[in-house]
Length: 346
Ligand code: SF4
Image: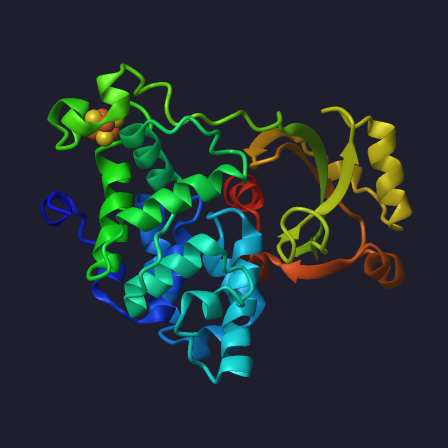
């Protein structure tokens, strides 16, 4: 608490007690560094100053603003939550930890952050930074990747948080983890907790916190057929039950390897009722790699120029829509698709 006022970063969401703005910042900052998340926060709060504005926005526009931040389900949940706050709560966020937990996509961490920052409720936040600080200072060896460990850390944090300054305490311990007690190379030499820190005193700083490894990510091979006719580009909106729901990509052939035989490509085009314009053949663009939390995607883009537009029936069956080059700029897209379009499509 002594350290925090002297070291804290000046961040826009620290100047507000508006639960909407706090919630927005917390959703954006999950799995994201402050430096990366800050411009997104500013875009959202400027585009949608109130929860009503966000709730009323078209989903495509929300996803477009989110583009590049990853974990798109967060954006969809955020949009849905805004609509829930408007339709079920009259546009006002619930004013307690228990009430906030009822909102979609709002877990224990986010509910604790909003309840303490906006309403001064005495409820301790636990994020990666807090886990690390507590594990090191108190020498807790429980595996933080195991859900059951959460209880141990929560109980400890609940005993530490002061009744008169819960918001300040939560901010302080998170900031301490982010700046001072960092995952790699924490600044132990100039640390005010050095003499009380179990990990430092016992030479265990690099061993704590204990975190078991996640399962290895599987690799998926995406072959995108970038179907074009004159100024038309065919794209489709991705459906549920897979990555990138609601974002736009190209016609996809997924295979078990990084290769797509020419004959497979030809038959895929024919299955769409398309005729290849061989006079405009272009080399495929090799594997752009995209790493998500639980899978790696290796994508290869195959430009396919058509002799004439795709027949309506097969186009609709494949879920494809026809766009002009200008229109595809405005669609929300996974970042690898956006990169391909801006770097490789002439
Ligand atoms: S002494 Fe090192 S490990 Fe302990 S709290 Fe300070 S920075 Fe973290």
